[in-house]
Structures are given as structure tokens and as C-alpha cells.
Figure (cartoon, rainbow, N blue to C red):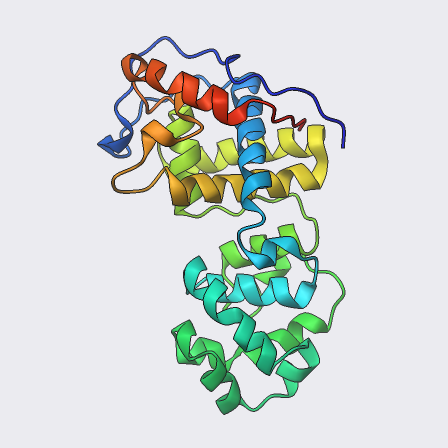
Length: 263
């Protein structure tokens, strides 16, 4: 993949004051130019490159493992899935083994996964999934217990569909960074971001940008007590006041020094 240097000091900011990151969702709607989105995508991709090694399902192209990860992540947090999915895979190492499995064995192996009715349906859902070699996100939503987020995750990571799954982490990161309020407005912005990423960097860049948004949301851009001072996006984030931004410029510059990435 072609690369060029990411300049952490190249940002331009809208000329208005913004509330502190912890102030909630009442952000002013800031101008969202092409360069603002490109800047965000580049930084998310950098974070995604670092983050991708943390969870094993981000390091594989195995459709079975990716399907299970997305299925369980809809109702279980990432820490739980990372802890218990490997043992589940020991019980059912292949898709065929899981499809043939007794429901009681599946429930026992996935007792950590929450809703029993949903877990009990997994062999049937997987059997339907295996009937076809390709699914779109829209088509995946017709499967039982596969909601929009899981459908888009499966479509992105397995079938290379240019979609960007939106959860609360993505809503916070994109909304706060660009100063966009409201789920529908953020969703439209994410669509713009997706188009820019795919056009300039392809599907690999889109996957990294999505991983980066999750990583920022989990580690820094939290719903409560966000860690704005340490966040790699703080330097140019609308939700981080100008008078406090200079304190983190040196941190961001140091963190990105030597990192090169082209979207």
C-alpha cells in the first residue's frame, strides 16, 4: 500500500468555541469539509493499525471466526468475547461442527454469552449463513438475531462491502470530533467518511478506520469520564476547547512521529 507522511499539525479548525468533551451531546454543528473528513480517516486508520493486534478476530480472514465474533459481540462486550470465544472454538472448531451440534452443548459452551434463546439459535443461523457464498448487509439482516450492526460488521470484515458499522463508540468519536449532533446527521457524515476512505484507500483502509473508531471510543472517547488529554484526536477535536488544546499537541505529535499511512 502506498504511503506518505501524516502531518499531525496540519489541521485547520472552525472558528467557533466548542464545549468540553465531557459536556454531553449538545455540540455545535461545525463545517464538515472534505479535508476534515480525510484528516479524521487518516488518524483513525493509524489507530486501527495499532489496535488490530489486540483482538484475535481482527487478525484473521476466517469467515467462521469472524461470523462468531460479530454474532457474540452484538450482546457481549469485547473483553468477554476475547476471553471465552477461544474455548467455544475448541468445542466447535469448524462451522460444520457447530451446525451439527446439539443445542444443549452449544448453550453450555456459550453460557457466558447472555440470552439463551439467541445462543440456542446459533446453529440454525449459521446453517442459513453457509447456504450462500456472499451476503450483503441488507440481506444479512433477514437472518434471525442478526441486527444492523452485526450485519454491517459481517459485510465489512467478511464480504468487503463498503459499509461502516455504527455503534455508540462511532457516534461519540465522529460526533465529538466533527461537532455533529444527532444520530441521523452523524450517520450521513459516516457515509461521507466511508466514501472518501474507499475511494482513496480501498477496503483495507476502511477496515482500519473502523477499528480505529472503536479503539478511540473504548480507550479515550468514553461516554463518561473521557480521556481527552491522552486522546490522539484531541488536537483538532471540536469537543476539546481551543484553550486546552495546546497542552496535548506535543503528545499527539510524539505519538504520531514516524507513523506513515496513506488512505
